[in-house]
Length: 329
Ligand code: ACO
Image (tube, rainbow, N blue to C red; front, side, top):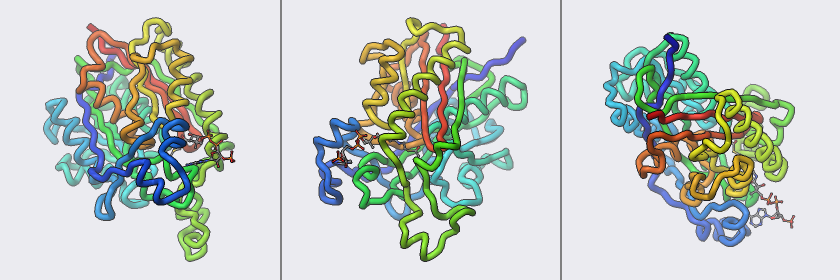
């Protein structure tokens, strides 16, 4: 009998600190009106100096495990998609596994920018459907405010911090992981990059002086690519799933820009109430945005049974991806 993978628990965590558009007006030459109309963002959450990605991840994972009814010994692995790990190494996943008493389970981080959560779900699906694992935690988490250039008004207004986690099991009921699509194009990588701190440009006084340890982004180029990549990912994932556009109940897209989300919704011919949007509260939380929105949509009753949900994302790499989730009767 063929095996399936199901999301059986969700959780998320954002820091308490709120940074509003009015706060940003005091830092850079911008306005609430510009940010709201160009991005849909009203406020975002920002970690304090003592809080790092693993602190948010640990809470999100605890909540997802509680939601799934899992004890630490039930977890067979944890994977964390992030571009802002606490350290280059050890991995955030290993730190959290230790903190939550998950024992010696496999634990690793992986990087696919804002698409990381979908990449993580594809990995979990493969592990579970192949019989390699029965229960795994998948996390998307980032603290982009830690690598934001607060003098760059074209990017600093976009980002917020957060973590979202799901418990994925071989046993339902839950959100069955269906058709998917994932891809990348490294030739465009330079348009969304943190140039300093890696093996190419190790940290030095020069890399600090040149502000290379923050996000460098060509926003309008990314924007155009994002619209096309998200639309294509959705269509290819639907095709692989054997599902038609008219049977989609809800879109949960990466929350990067309201105009990008709207374009994806138009491609799927969805009504406004079929599109989950929380960008106004959190901004772009990178890898965390989809699992955070998924958790909120589960808890506020937006997702019910039966439901077919489309996930779609794009991000640094450049990367993109889509996945169909089914809450079957
Ligand atoms: N406030 C006021 N004016 C601004 C601001 C600001 N914060 N930022 C830019 N402007 C100005 C520009 O200087 C420009 O002025 P000009 O016409 O006089 O030259 C004008 O507004 C228009 O600028 P554009 O860059 O064309 O604005 P656009 O409509 O493209 O919006 C934005 C910019 C919001 C960045 C958009 O391009 C976008 O969302 N891109 C996608 C970004 C993204 O999601 N990246 C993923 C990153 S995260 C990850 O993967 C880790």
